[in-house]
Length: 267
Ligand code: BV8
Image (cartoon, rainbow, N blue to C red; front, side, top):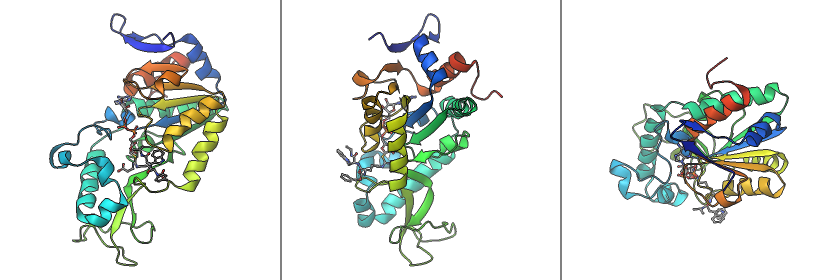
């Protein structure tokens, strides 16, 4: 496939197609969709990687559901506590920082840049990205399971899960579980930019989870250039305009350097 970029061990460089660099420099509306893969280099395990230790016998897709929470709220709450601790020890990697820098450079060029993420770890915001559309919520926020209202967690509570101070119901993480609807506003914003963008990046996602997985196809169908960044093939790979077969933390800084001569953390 001539539009595929692989890391060249001899030159230790990526041969990024010059026409892709030009497209990146001249895009009017750039949309980026990220998945768990962009946080992999920060040490946050992707959703499909085997869970470690205590959790190895559970399937995340079974635990991340309202049914699992109703059945065993303590187990699900402790799973999220374990994941929150993992996320709290992680830092944004060069891929997160490169996207935050790219956003600033694209906006300085009076073009539009929209970052849509399936991730719940908040690492994009910690790297400086603005206006991040969190399709699946944020693991660091908490809400009441019964009323759905945001709640500041009372750290001293002995209850597992802690109770809502308003209704006494159990608290839950403010994430979208399987079988739950996404925020209508977040979904509409993501849909709209996929419909209007001229360049769409799909980064670190297996493009399996709906409705997020439909976004790159919406972009393709309206004529956008679609770039996939992933070390492995996904269902999107055969359809993407360009496939950058590399880890996000390596290829995104290379794209930034090639297109703007900048490094992720430079001024
Ligand atoms: C909904 C929050 C209405 C919780 C998550 C249509 C057809 C079939 C099924 C459905 C459908 N529509 C809806 C469904 C049901 C379901 C679904 O999609 N099921 C799947 C299994 C088919 N969807 C829903 O339930 C959604 N709700 O649509 O409501 C409805 C309801 C029921 C029925 C119909 C309609 C809600 C989905 C949201 C679920 N919540 N997260 C939590 O985190 O605890 S999703 C969760 O999975 C994470 O957000 C995560 O992001 C996502 C996994 O996807 P990826 O991000 O892609 O991660 P993954 O591990 O899969 O892949 C990582 C990739 O990174 C890999 O490709 C790897 O190669 C790559 N990688 C690794 N290292 C690197 C890298 N890439 C770059 N650099 C690296 N270094």
